[in-house]
Length: 298
Image (cartoon, rainbow, N blue to C red; front, side, top):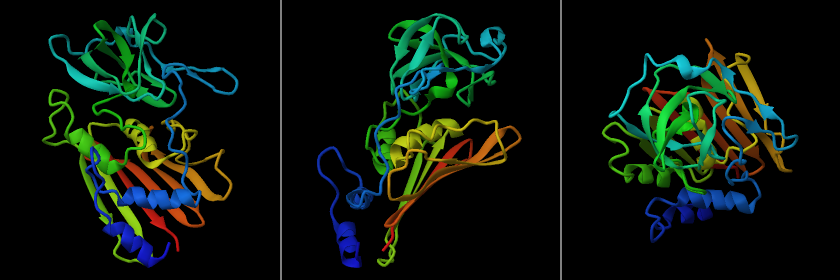
């Protein structure tokens, strides 16, 4: 893409209708798609968050950790409540009791808004590498329990929504779901160097864990669905390659840094002949910050 083309893209007006956010990031992505450089932005595989069924052999991935049925000392009881959203791509089971072996009452779909009526302050288990515990919740007038690792304070992004649109959606979310006085913050900058066109974005999501933010980043920035959220256990430095990268992609991998039984940061790197993307996630100010940088390579 030459300088004049990129300049023309930057100068285009905002999209009409419901889309009222800057669209030059979308245009850069569209340019990259024409060059077959972007990864698939479809949602992740439809799997159960409690028992992740392997798509190839049907085996079950077990949850580890102690039963949370005896952990009531740090819970709040009704009438206290708050709202949360299901972040598991395949939905989240509502259970009859606060353990992973009790009866499944319902499957709460991805993005469902639920009421939290009991909230433990301590992680008691790990499911598919994601730490959490069992919350007491209400969904469609049913009461039960659900794994907290897949319950976030923000609604997940819609399919193909970019970060600017997602930030605008959160700010316009239902007023009873959350106070945004210290809510999500979004910034964006466009390179003025037309010989190396690029866009940088930063999205700060308070109260969101690193693993929950990763699920959101996958939808916003095209992190491949096969690169599952890594577990807290593992080497201090790990590299997870995309084993299903398309032909012509030079690099598609997730780098993870761990210490003291937790993940300190994750960085996804994508590189082809004409396009590069870097997505970095790290804890920040009682939440998680997502920083993305995309550039066309001339």
